Image 1 (cartoon, rainbow, N blue to C red):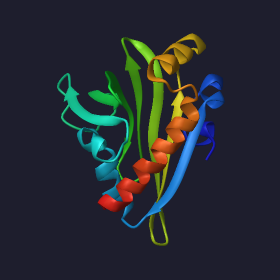
Image 2 (cartoon, one colour):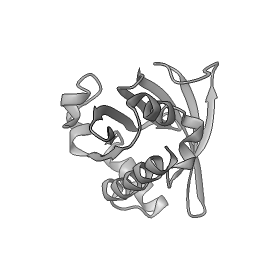
Image 3 (cartoon, rainbow, N blue to C red):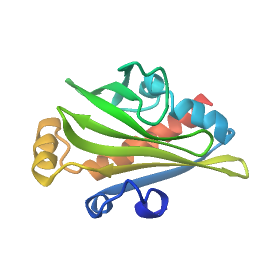
Length: 165
């Protein structure tokens, strides 16, 4: 699923240059998988880097435009991000944009497709950082190759999600 084929309204040429997708079939309905991936406070149960967070600015759950304060950790490093939900289509897709200190960081999302054996879940990530910020955050977090790092983390996330359902 190329980025601009599945999310043309949110993709740019820069996003295409730094795009990662991981797919796994999970033995659950698309509706059940959506319930889990759109429950951002619980994301820390599956993600190796996100540790959870809380809905903010009056948001009470996943809806386009809803805001979420995410907490993240890698080793001793800790940081927060602000998430804005960009797609909330129960049983089909869930996506959000991430900023930190007012700067664009990334787009993340899940595409869900019913298939034999459950749901084909494709988690995707698009890097929205400018090259200078990508280098600086890579040095600070000791992650020189964010694409490879995120691919491994996404594989862990989908495996943990499959176990949870």
